[in-house]
Length: 131
Image 1 (tube, one colour):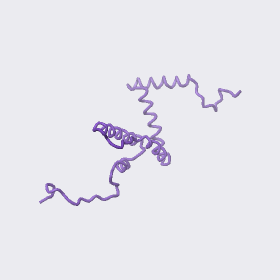
Image 2 (cartoon, rainbow, N blue to C red):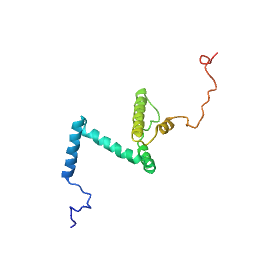
Image 3 (cartoon, rainbow, N blue to C red):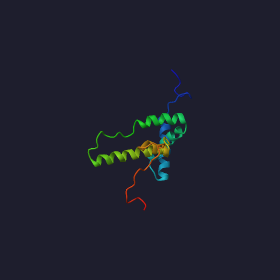
Image 4 (spheres, helix red, strand yellow):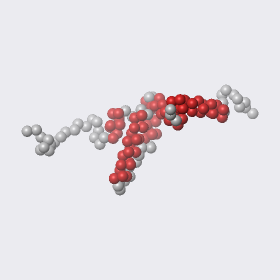
């Protein structure tokens, strides 16, 4: 039977996990936040750190984009549209927070017109035309 205390084992004891959680809880209490908030922050930092690498960033972006809010075929009510738009804004903010997309990339994703397209105004309403 192999030695369970071997240094090559990745298994961690309950005591080690408990010590880490107690330390995290103490930090949270001292900073006036919750343990969950600290864990969320650490998870976001881990993703952000890996998103810096271009190949990992593309890979992570492709995974996260699978969870983008999907619009229904038809919006039945204004409330349903509002819920979708709120969900989309929250998702966009997560992409920005995790550095999975730049501000310019977000604008290009959400715009009907591509950034390379030049806009031209053909007619102005009479009230906007200068005399």
